[in-house]
Length: 208
Image 1 (cartoon, one colour):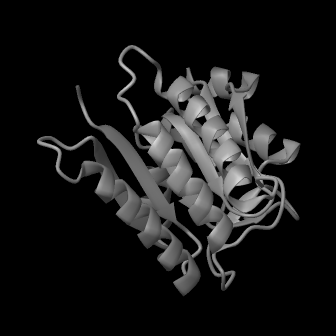
Image 2 (cartoon, one colour):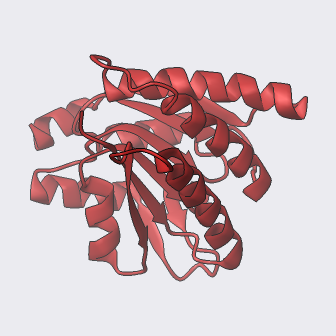
């Protein structure tokens, strides 16, 4: 069975995001430890180059994990800490339409503040190539919340190889387990929320 591919995309671009992404990388690398063949392949992108970032968004993978500040003051967007780099889903949708290729993954983890709102979900749907499991947040989060959820999510995702189960379904189960584990470990409600998103009519028309 082929290894699953996880794309880690850091748009936050500061020391806190770097530390959080390093933690996720280490978690994934530990999953491969002692295995004859890798269970997971990790693509790590940390860049300000628009073409590089947009290519990462539209590359085929099992999980697309994006770390950045979530902003929806104008339109749902990922931004860097210094405000010098922004990727909006409106922009991403336009590029996807031009290229005829949208987000193609089993799951999206939008690891930023307040990325689970209806406005974010609507914007993401306009960029989708197919159905995905979408994990967003309901509040402001930091590196600790991200680390607790991520370790539980990837631990659950790779606990078995899920033969015959779609990546989106595996991610849905893993996210649900991670949300429960977060509450158990911290005695707090988990800020991460999971839902299933399907391409919008616009996306089906432009990306079919």
